[in-house]
Image 1: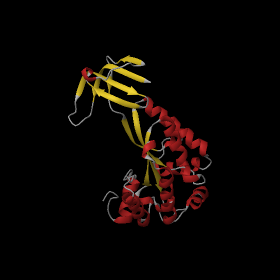
Image 2: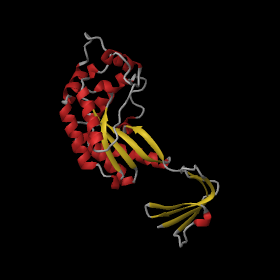
Image 3: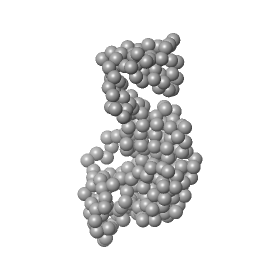
Image 4: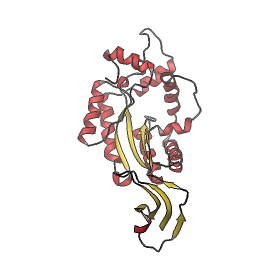
Length: 263
């Protein structure tokens, strides 16, 4: 189908930051074929003509950070500090199956497209019992809707109690201990899984970029951080990480490194 949108205010975001009044857009199939002045609009015929008067067209917005499985948990576990909330979150992920990760990503993708976001970075963490924690299902959902996506596979090889400023004598609840023990993996195992994930799913022709996503400085050993950085450098990929989100993390920076996590 060939569509013409005419008389629209175009905010180009090009090198000259041009704004074109009464501009035109031509869309053919999945592709934007023309964006510019009315005078240079390609000739028809068009299957559909839309009057864009009183409307503004801008490039697609970018959601630079999300966790798509969290779309299914909105409104749950409110009012808790991040470090406490993460335990509820980890527990909630454990029964999730492949179709749940597809549904969570599909819901988020629909909402983003409806509100003008055409690209998203999904810092993905799911259920370790599912292949790649379910990230492949999130990719399938976003491809089905045509949303450009970067999926950073979350990596973390430290136990929970090593990542928060607890008193060394503090006793964790048995439930937290069980989750921590079941999720424990060596640095090399995480890096191997990340490389396998990239090899299987990275495909820019399908709007998919895959990359390492270390969870946070205080949640990763130096071996894991340097290994993730090496994967990103070698394959010319981004690296995505949480950094200095809370007061507790500021304390952990001082405890681990004698400085802030940013430095």
